[in-house]
Image (cartoon, rainbow, N blue to C red; front, side):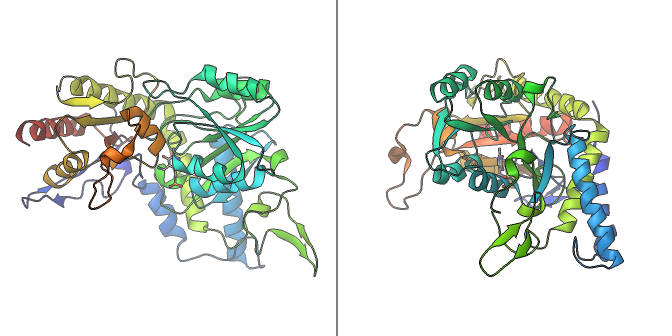
Amino acid sequence: MENYRELFDGIDNTVDLTNGMAVIPINFDNGATTPPLKSVVKTIMDNIGNYGPISRGTGQKGDICTKKVEESRNIILDFFNLKNNNTHTVIFTKNTTEALNLLANTLINNKKDKVLISRMEHHANDLPWRNVSDVVYIDTDEFGRVKLDDIEEKLIKNKGEIKYVSITAASNVTGYLNPIYDIAKLCHKHGAKIIVDGAQVIAHKAIDMNGTEAEEQIDFLVFSAHKAYAPFGSGAIVGLKEDLVNREPFLKGGGCVEGVFDRYEIWKCPPDLFEAGTQNFFGIIAMAKALEDLKEIGLGNIYRHEMEIKDYIIKEMKKMNRVRMYGDIDNTEDRLGVITFNADGFDYEYLAKKMAYDFGIALRCGKFCAHPYVYRLMGVEDISAYIDVTSQEENIGMIRASLALYNTKEEANKFLNSLEYILVNG
Ligand code: PMP
């Protein structure tokens, strides 16, 4: 098994447990955010003291930064195998949430336009569409997988009315990978375009936006840097130019406009049209560096490594009587390194916190900003039974372990042993 730990600084710094013992922490909460690669930190440090205005001014520092930003766009296009296409552009955003809000407010002109999204989506790919369009939902099955048949049925039933299907490449709750190329084909067959939320997937599995044939092309893809080994604050839309021209910008201000007159404006073309205001230069170059390095390590290698650990954890957790894992645990091929579970007789929050404070293992617990999906997976129809009458707090949730390339089998064993210890000793 590969060991990628040397690519990172700081992940072996100790933390103090509640009993005062110092341990090297285990981070199994990579679905939330990932630590930065050493090379990414170096890129930021090398540039932090020496920057100038991007796409403005005539100074040399500004010119260098502008060039680096444009190179970053090319690195991103290359990462998604679009280097030789002239079809897509890269728009920088602050994260996936902003990217999806931008698309929802830009691509939809009429509240009656229908958008197809799944019941699996993170709120970032659900709530923005609700305000601006008539949302049609794709159902999930008993395990939480998206139903491909249902997509085609709904595309046929709403032919001509659904212009966009916006779907995640992988669930942040169960890790299920959606068949985005098959979905793209269905979209194109029925006159729609596909928007892929790549937040969970880009650091774990390669995405070829060209697909293997023209009908499989991914029209739009959005992602955040902080889930791909670069810091918070940057993300991007890789999107079809033809759908982004002649639009009003989502954010308005300097840089997005060719001319402003007393009564009208002449807008620029994308990407400038959607990048009003001073851009996050360090975030952009850090994000590009992370993607460049992930490509060099090889997404295939990363995927294999994470799958090996995930399959091992699931195999071992199946032996724990009190544990209930979500999703189809007898067939885990179509899932990222994400294991979501509860334990009979244990409050999810208590268990997750005990793992953190007594054993130094970081997990995530709750509803993962995907409430409708979690309620369905847990079979909750009426949440009122779970609301505390005094505090009005709701007590429904799961625990999630989510892996990254630097995690190891030893960490998996420590996780399993700690979980077992708590299940036995309380
Ligand atoms: N989509 C998915 C699938 C996610 O997992 C997340 C983050 N948990 C988001 C969107 C939102 O990402 P961000 O907070 O970086 O905007």
